[in-house]
Amino acid sequence: MNESKLSSKRCLPCEGRVEKLRSEQINDLLSEIPSWNCIDEHHLSKSLFFEDFAQALEFTNQLGAIAESEAHHPEIVLNWGRVDLRIWTHAIGGLSENDFILAAKFDEL
Image (cartoon, rainbow, N blue to C red):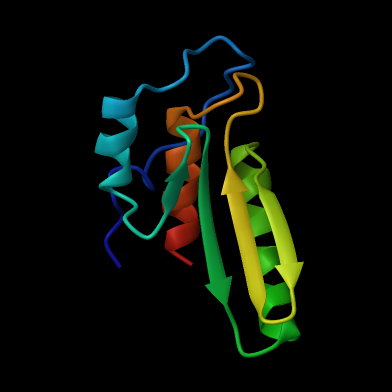
C-alpha cells in the first residue's frame, strides 16, 4: 500500500503552541482520510467493525502501539466486534495536523 502524504509524516509535540485548524484546512486534510468524519471542527471520528471481540482487541492493540510511537493518544472505545475512535489535540481543544497524521497511520492498518 502506498503511503499517503499524511501517513509518512510524524506527529510533532505541540503542547498548546499551535492554532486550531480552520474549516478550509480541515476540509483539505479530510480529503486524505475520506473514511473519517469531522465532528464540529473539534475531533475526528470513525467506527470499525470486526467479527468478534478478539479481532477488535487485536486491532486496538495495534492502534495503541502506533499512538504510543507517535506520542499522540486518541480516545479508543473497545466493544464486542467494534472499535470507536475519536482523535483531537487535547492541548488546544481542537484539531491539529497531528490528528490527521494519526488517522492516516491508523488507516494503513
